[in-house]
Each structure stands twice: as structure tokens, then as C-alpha cells.
Image (cartoon, rainbow, N blue to C red; front, side, top):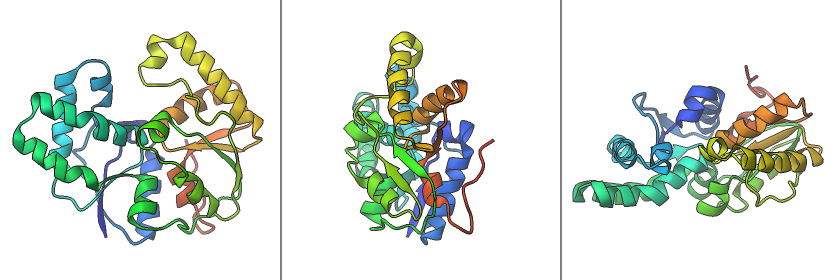
Length: 250
């Protein structure tokens, strides 16, 4: 199988180890990967703040780059939700019939990472080893937009040595929400404090998620407060093996 890897701007700029982990993981599973170095942003930040033209240009670029690919894999439920929920409206408003047709053909081939592993490859045991206690944070986009359900838990359950710790109030937002955390800082901070309390209560060494945006929000507070828990993207756990353990973060 061949797949094109869309590495989100968050990962590319701030968390490159996530992209490298996805490559190691998928190549280990026999997936031949393509990467277009001209890729940029999915356009979500632009769309959510009212910059429709700028969001459209990013959406059109995405379709142009990937319309002929077999599959697109994205390690971010937030970006996949943007593509599934907002691209159609942008193209209806600003696009052409040809663009809308290309997008309709491409959309069923766009997968979030856990969807790709379970729904497309039919794999739950990816050969990972991660001997740590881990709790999973369900990001809002993965939970409510993509309805990922138990996919992340099924993948974690097959990781050798990993002990899953259930996160209380799993349906609650971490408070990031992109520009929400800037425009509504007090509310965001209160939501973050509750989420941190829940995470610490699990006794987990690591909190994982499918979005580095959430993990950045959580990890920053964990670091500032010297809490006994770290953040890690699910891809990095799944990429880890006895022979090639977790890549150290800078």
C-alpha cells in the first residue's frame, strides 16, 4: 500500500518527532510513504477566525496536492475534522465544479492515523513496546467530529508493557481550542486546571492524545508546575519498540 503523509503545521514546526514516528511506524507496517515538502496548513486557523479566502487557498492547495494519491494519512484529528467539516462549505462558496468534484473523490481517502491503522490496514497490534503507565486524552475533534470511539484504546491495548489508566471526565475539553485559549484565557485556564487534575489523579507517567495542539497546552502547564507526568503523541508510543525505544524530546 502507498500513502501520502500530511504533517500538520503544528507537528512540522514544534513537534517534528511526531512526524518521524509516523514514518517509522508505517514503514514498519509495510506502507510506502510519499511526502510533499510543499505542503503547508489545512487552513483551520484561518477558517475559524473568519479569513475565508485564506482558508480556501489552503484547502484548494490540499486537494491539488493529494487528488491523485491512493491514501492520505494525517496524525491530527483536528486537521482531519477541518477537512471533513469545513472544506465542502469553502468550496461551495469560493470553488469551482471541478474542485468540488476532485474533493468529493479525495475525501474518502483521507484518514486520521488511528483510523488508517484500524480501518484501512486492519491492524491493532503494530509491534510496539512502551513499558509505562499511560492515560489517553480524547481531543474534542477526535471525540465529537470524527467519532473515533475506542480505536486509540484498542491500539494502546496491544502495546507491550503499557498499562492503560482511565482518564476521569474523558469527554471534557482541555481548554486549548486554538485561538480560544488566547481570546478566553481565564476560561481556558480553568478548563486546563481541571484536565490536569484528572490526568495527575491517574498516576500515569504519560498523557497521550492524537493532537499535538492539545498536548502542547497540557504539556506546557505540566512543565510549569513540575507535575510528575509528561505528554506524548500516540504515534510516538506506537513507533517505539524494544530495539528502537522512544525518541527523546528536546
